[in-house]
Image (cartoon, rainbow over the protein chains, first blue to last red):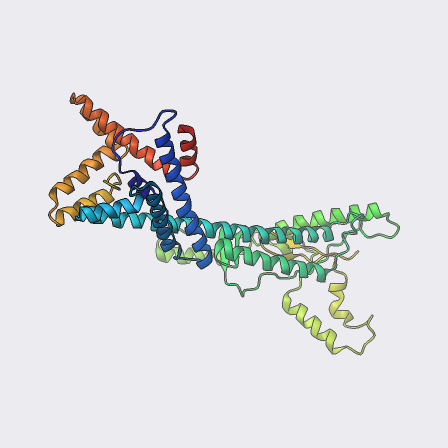
Length: 340
Length: 87
């Protein structure tokens, strides 16, 4: 764009740095407007086609602008002037100028297309992030009871459903922003993790954290809410700790030679963790997805039993579960649902 | 003289001109480059001034500043503000 605008003038020396320099002022306005037209045409074509159509659009817009200006001022302007010069004085230099002039408009159009697509992407991202923020707020309201809004009554199923929706939105956001549905910062390794979209992302952890302060009979609503709040704080604490669990003693293996490095890493792998979530929270029972599936199957098999006794043994752990945190993306660390 | 101030492009143009036998045109392109390319033109103007060529230094300086001015003209908003300001 800059090249063409310089061609616009074909003037040497002299500069309009004085007030009242109408010719210079008009030239500046004209040049800036021309660039705007080329960029805007490129943006429109770029958004419509999603790609390279912005280049011919930029060239067409620049040429049209110059033709109109030439028609009005009766003086060759911009590309018209460059082409006119090449026709009147054909040489490698003037033909080169024509090529550069078109290339400049093409590049400007391409830049416009990039800007246009970026704006559209930002708009999409904004919508998705807004939707996700709404759902996260809904989830928080479900977790934290404030009485007036009836919060805190969300069931595990509802929380997981909302969590899935939030995950889905996050996947869409990540696909647009990062090019991969799953992309988050892994606090354990300190790396940015990109995984395949079909890997398991959320593993329900069923746990029981015995507490004598919450859910006792005769508690006032305020006391119940405070007890819930306190318990959630502990759950948050544990969840934070869980990210750091299974810490292994680190020893520098990087500087060693190839053979020694393998040996060093093998030794490191065989060591017991210096800290484990099981030892940190011995009273937390965790259930993996396979065990959950077994429980579900068992309940199905005992369909004709008294509902109160159905799968009692198998679902005992679930029934006494106070909370089910579901690890999620960075933006939504977990959902917690509790029965009280 | 279009685009003659752009480093790289100017030299490429000169090569094209030399290949086609337009030695004079190639020299003109390079003269335009040293007199219009920002930073280069200012250095050349300083050299001319030291050598005692005051008129030449002034012309080179004006052409160098003119390039910057034209580039600014072509930038949306900047060019518009500049145009309104100058008017």
